[in-house]
Length: 439
Ligand SMILES: C[S@@+](CC[C@H](N)C(=O)[O-])C[C@H]1O[C@@H](n2cnc3c(N)ncnc32)[C@H](O)[C@@H]1O
Image (cartoon, protein in one colour):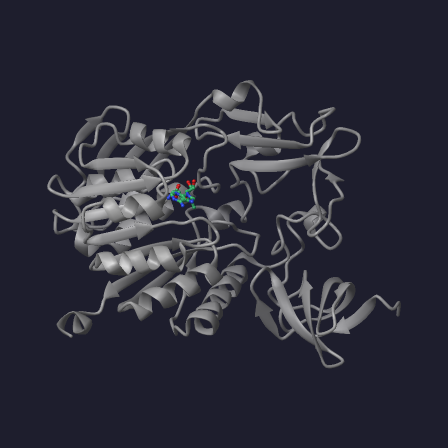
């Protein structure tokens, strides 16, 4: 056996797509394997107490192993599908276990977590979902991606995790001399935009995103009829009760327009699923019909418009976004919804000047909102907080600040918005502890 190859039996999971094994008394983080397997792994990094490795031969496979759905992202390959060797249902259990463990370790919060598939995911086999890919360009001018922790570019002929209009796009296989980065994004109408090093004729052409948001039973739909520029509220019989009589669920149909460089949820089904999960998490306060709601880090208004349409005409939604392009998109999406107010600026400086909230929804970037913003939320005394997080560690840190400020973590729902990768989105609901109010 070469010096670089070691035999490992991973027993646990760590955040970031790693399994955890032990070798001669040290911890080894190993990719491309599953707990319970026996593998030969190539060591890729040696530090005194921690090694990193990737499984290159599977000696005893796990029953949850499947042939990699995208072999170029397997051992030695590009990043972007680090759970491509794990059966979809098992990958959701994997992510739930990691979120649960992270909340316990960092936030000292014990909660059962489940991770839900997005609509149609099993039928798509966890593929064909990305509406945006960023590609590197190799020395010959052809697009590809980097292996994890490497500057090398591996040329690619497509990207099966991406929607067909990107996977089959002509950027793959064509030369882009002089470029170092390409971005391809798709709207929901089949149009695509290509940016070369952040520039190009498509940079100022808006992409259209048509979003269907399931509205929990009992919430108003913001009136009926078409709302120019936003979409329309609709009643359908396709509710959680499978269309049984008496189980009517509503849905909102909303159009958003964003510049290709502006933040937008990447999975094609994510905008509707995420907005639906946020409405469900805040449903009790929305149903009162007069809540003051903050929507912090609102991006292009994905959550702002559904919140405003379901909160009632006496409610108001105050949305805050730092990126002026996203803020403009949010204003445009909510332009016919008089109860939606968009403020462009940093949450840190804008939120303290907003009316006192009943409900705070926040969806910060990967690093989380941080101690100061969470302390500010506690200080503003909302009855509930709905926190959307793409990094469980940041969620756990911020959850601990909210808990220390008197907020109880009621529920955490995981959404599998990044299938075939280790990434997961969480929607966590916190309620102010009534006992603290009486102190
Ligand atoms: C994860 S995105 C969420 C956007 C939106 N909720 C959605 O789901 O489409 C986070 C957003 O926060 C914005 N942002 C980052 N730092 C900010 C800050 N300090 N204040 C306000 N917005 C910020 C980013 O521009 C980005 O649009």
